[in-house]
Amino acid sequence: MKETYNLKIKEYDTQTTVSLYKKSIIIRDELENAIIQLKRFRCSIISNITDLGNGLSKYTCDETVLEDKIKEIITDKNLQSHYSYIKSCVPCSYITETVNDYEKHERSTIISLSRTKKAIYDYAYANDWTLFVTLTFDDNILLAKYGKSAADYDTCVKCLHIFFTVLKRQCPELQYLGVPELHHYYYDSNNNAVVFNGEKLNNEIYYYLLNKPNRTVQEQDIINKVAKGVYKRRFHFHFLFHNYPEKFLVDSLKRDKKGRIIYNLTNYKLGFTTATVIDSLEASQHYITKYISKDLVELSKGKKRYWTSKNLKKPVENTYCLEDHELRSINADLTNVIESDTRYKVISVENGEFKNKICYGVILNGEIFKTESLIDYLNLDLGVIRHYHYKNFQLQYDNADKNNQHYTHPCASLLYWCHGYSVPDRPLDYLANAVIRSLNEELQLRTRPNAFSGKVEYVPEEYIYFTVDDVFCKAVLENGEYVYHKL
Image (tube, rainbow, N blue to C red; front, top):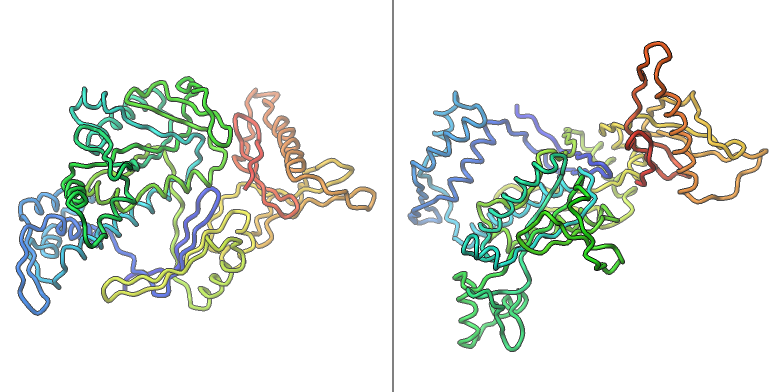
């Protein structure tokens, strides 16, 4: 019997996503995934369609091209022993329900868009970022080097490949995640902005003309030229960077709306650049995900849509098969603890005869410990959770509670005592930084070299978690000392 799951959990640095499925999902093995991948590829190379009537059609593709793809995949996945079976499952000709080109195209685009966004989301939220970077292309440079402008996607991709090949040699520790975005306006083959009724032609005007029932000759001409690729939109790229060397940043003497310094990248020679220090990690993660649009997916079919360095982390993913009553308890937990309606939604999925309902929630770290039903399924690597007591205005480590790992009540709040009276309220940052000072004093003592061997025997925890007035806090070891991180 096939293994199934109805609960999927993805754990990121600052949040956890939970998906509950009304109907269990079958876990496919490597062989099944290979066959599905080949069937998708086969759909993209269909060369002949014969209508058989009764709602059925015969689809045929190039046998040589399909054969090459089969050999490539079985080699990559080490499935050579299953060659005959795979070939029988993915013939070059097959009969199925007739699907018109529009339905096929729409379905393919939506699936591709969803898959791309999920991958970008995972990389964005599983890693830390310090810079938000925009890279543009100077048409004069691109025309001189490649004979094409920034409206040509392949040319932009080639330029990026060259830039990051050099950049990774200059700073091997660099982490990056990037996506393309289409410029707002359309340009002609001479790189001049297309003008319609005194305004630059943008996507809103184009779609207005596209949906207009009675078009003028000029309007129809615009529609035709966009369809043929005579009028195009330029590409630029947005990136999240981490560990980017300061020596490659120069102050542009400009500021953004928040007053932040706008930097330029000195080692990028293909056009204009901007870089700003990220002050809201969650906002930058959200922005990088939203740039992938349906238009972009259609223009980049079969091509690379996002760029990542090889040193990025991925979320920890686990799946479980639970009883109905357990799922109901977890779903109740989600609706109770998630403080924002935007982080909980119910999705209905329908694909042919397959129907399912998914309850999807995003839980922030500060909410996790209120989810009593869900907490048992989380693989939280919390390092050490410490208990503190406030005595005589000095924070002291409570040794008795050092290894407390009970997730339902993971840590006690700071207790304020001063001659039997509660201490007046103090700001969160003040109290959290008092904890950090205490941790660093302890760290300094523990990392002293042994008097006999001269070696440091203590290995400090990378993370230490604590609470301040029921607010969950995190101490992160950076450059030999603990630094306070808000959650």
